[in-house]
Image (cartoon, rainbow, N blue to C red):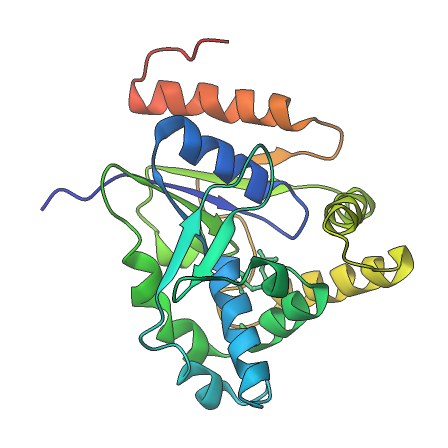
Length: 232
Ligand code: DC
């Protein structure tokens, strides 16, 4: 069976993965997997069911028969996430949900529970996968792997703007602390830690605009997939 191609985009929070993946999937008309949203959904369900994030087995048991769909949003807005048909984007984009997601994502039993589910998003004509371990673990044979990074202050600034625009109230110093804590946990965990995959194209987005980063990645995609150059 011929598998559809996959482009993975990994990196820490605020590195610009979401925007880049949105743009690539819209441009190529490919499917999108926001794997962070799956961990965030588990965090939301765990909270609703009163299951502590330390209970890996309990959280993993929540990962069954969930219908999650991603809808591309307008412009550079984060992707819209539908859980069993309901838009849960506002709840799962809260910073506390991100922290809880990072904690429960450290359990190998949770990661294994959603591995096949994540892979099921690989459908024609292709998939753009956004996460922390897309290129290293979930899609190790991806045709193109990208790893975005940016300095912590810049990433916190971007998250702050994003949350504020959504009317989510958060204090900047607390956000800096929460992002630093989440980064550490995601990088230091034993199972599928955040790190660039072998052969990944690593791009520092700290001092670069979204258009610039997209143009660079689009040029790589055109070359790698033999597409005609994109009109500007
Ligand atoms: O990308 P995000 O901020 O929505 O992800 C939320 C958390 O989920 C992140 O801090 C760690 C976890 N995560 C993960 O462990 N592996 C992924 N592929 C994606 C997210």
